Length: 403
Image (cartoon, rainbow, N blue to C red; front, side, top):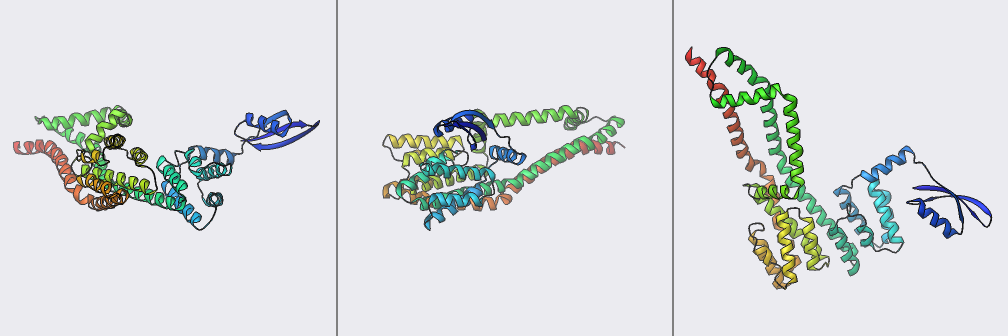
């Protein structure tokens, strides 16, 4: 914030404008100048500056922007530019106002004598612990450019993996959503017409037909109530998902759904191996690397395995033990490769190979996801359509037979 203050020094009054977080620091600044405060006034922000402030407060830094920042910074440092100058260049290049402000603050902290990783750690929502730890290891080893290259690649691989999994789920999601919409339209507009016909002919209806008509009548006569119930159920599902117990139940279900469970296991295996490999390659100690990886992995069941592994190492047990003991979560190959890496002293390299293997597997499975899921969707559609057809058409056949 900008403040305009008036102060006196050696009997003379003067006026100045400063950019300070609050007015208390302005008072401190005036005292350092040797002046006496007369007045301090906060300058009103213009509309553009207010919008900029709101954007910096609520704006978001995309993963693609962070990857580009990391790569460019690594290249600049490798060719000999100082860290402060490289950050100043990247600050001018970025169009994201929030990210521009973050880079500016990081650069200012470094100019004041702060280390790069400490400056980054002040912005955990932009630079997660994984990023900060790898930069710290690079600073301490004198290989900051190499560490930035590794973390850039790691972020890119993780983002690609995430996009592939999301992309694979789009097709079945669209089909299911379309089925729900079509079902609601049928219940609101088609079924009432048939119901009127059945009532006029006074025919005895099967239980399945009565069930469909009951739902249709409820939706037709209580549309707002039904809509409200759907909203309540949706909000309730979101709240339940965000709760620890609800998320735990959801993760358990996901890990036991055919086809999907294998994709989840291989995705988490790839993410774990990639993160650990990147951290160890950057010089981060094993215990810290496992702890940081536990924050990167989202599934609580996988977090537990990593915590157990961390405790095993502190007790002097092999790193691979927790992975071998949990083959239902991590495939056999993961534990065995880690064990070989420990024995040969090539743990980072082995984890890198594991990551490459499972990323390739996930890539192939996501490409084939539509082919794999299509039969299940066809069966589901067939069951739903068949139930509806039998329920609504069988009374019509009964009427025709009685004529």
